[in-house]
Image 1 (cartoon, rainbow, N blue to C red):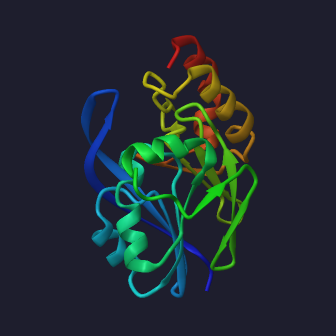
Image 2 (image 1 turned 90 degrees about the vertical axis):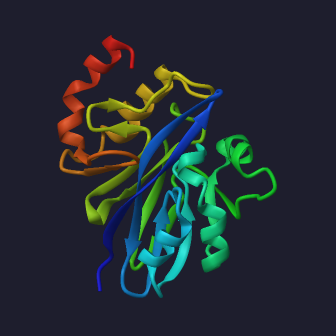
Length: 209
């Protein structure tokens, strides 16, 4: 059976630089009837575990280290035995949320993660955070961009550890070079495609966000 993509939305808070915001997060599950990975274990480990069901959870992959994308990861790992993976450059942000729990492994650019016969390639796409990644599943025609690229522009860069020129380079050099029909599954909000977003890069640069 071919791998498929499932999603759910969980709600909670995002906190950074002394502020707290209510947020809805996209949680993505890639796999088949036997095994799966979770991309961004946000807010509610029990709900995510229920969506995984009795499948083997091969990994919990974090697109970046902001608390709203990783807050449920340890509880989900404890419930399933799955390893938590995050890019090395976001280890400091991870520690802000989970000071007494380390990730189980660190991701690097171009690492391959295989689940249910589908290969996902790690693309290091910093800017929103230093260790932000996207996951390109070429055979599914999909890229999971976390908070790097949304429908309508780049992720936010007005907070600590973020940088607008860096996120623009990441989007231009790592994401917009993917096939135009590639579906962009984001960390919040609606999905889009590379072809829909690519013509607007100059507008984003001009506006500065």
